[in-house]
Length: 329
Length: 188
Image 1: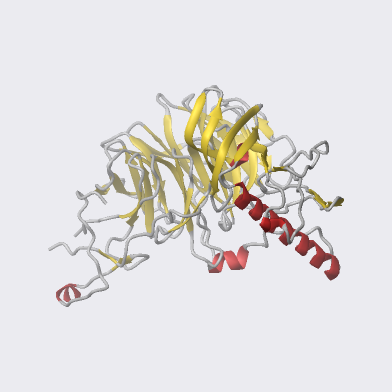
Image 2 (image 1 turned 135 degrees about the horizontal axis):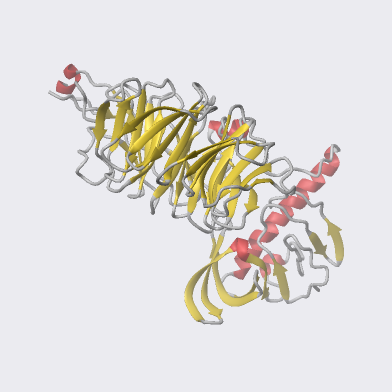
């Protein structure tokens, strides 16, 4: 029997949230960064959604944001033609990397030494963060804006998704793409899961899974609405996806069956990510909020508390009941 | 019957004052290196002298902000922009200056915010012998951001300053003498 899910709403942004990313699990928990069109990316505690700080400095909409594994550094990509690297502990700006056009995507290598950037100038760039004055390594090839660029295969390869309707796999030492996937429509999102070597690509109403080395199709799932973003659970049990119809969908990865759909957002869902421990997933929307959803609804975790029927009868002042989804938070 | 899911509380939202990153949090205390990286002097005496100099610079900058209140300031900004305005206040992180009567080529803005990172330098007239400066006997302080303007002449009346940001090199004129402070990541 499925429980109705009411998400935890994180407010603070004043414009649409277009990207979000989790860090790895650190001794202080895990963290979440959100990119917003208001130009002020925010860092939050990953399991509770509590605001930690806002990175101030960008002069335009922030399109992409990422954290390194231990959440000591953050990187953001913005419409002010720069990518910035930040100290994620103090909030200080560490580096500004000037580009020739809007930057859309940023990604750290596992050792946080290099930053991958991609944007509307169609060129993938690799910056050595220990030598920021050095010119970045450039990988041209895409014929339209790059939406997302990710490291994969132990940072030896790069996966890039572009408005030219291709996803390309690159070896950082070879100028030509190793493999290319073509689509009939633009790709809305792309995720890479090292464990299992799977690439998740969404386009139109489809969520598709490919082998990250051969780029061979593993499976596809068709959803009721145009999907903007999807995420695969770390243990590959579930997929969550969100898009134009404001809902969050949950599918079983093994059977491709739709398990649940949740209402909550008041605008299209732009990004969805599972937390590194898989216990919750976060969604960012056009409505300017982030919402945290439980994977196992009803479990005690973070700010959620499992309530047994007996406890409901007694007066328990600590517990507050969530407002129904229809009432605006 | 569907059992409702309970929450202990809602996620905390942003603090309207300041940008967060609580310096008293356990993570900050454990991970954040001191924001003042020194010139690398191992000698404790030199280190103390450097720290004194830093403290003095910081005090000067803060007193300068106080003395600027309600005065007409000329701002020299990037892209060859020069504007004048009446200074109101600075925010806690020195990211924005609140000004009134901002004189721009396209008109006068009654109230405005000036983004500090866009400012190269600013100048204003100080009164002679203001009480607050007696102890420091400070006729003038010259400091610049990345480009050290050696040509600027300190005068009794005008003080040329730049909001001190992340890295700067300073040349401080004290009582006629010149002390050159090491460049680097000095955040005053």
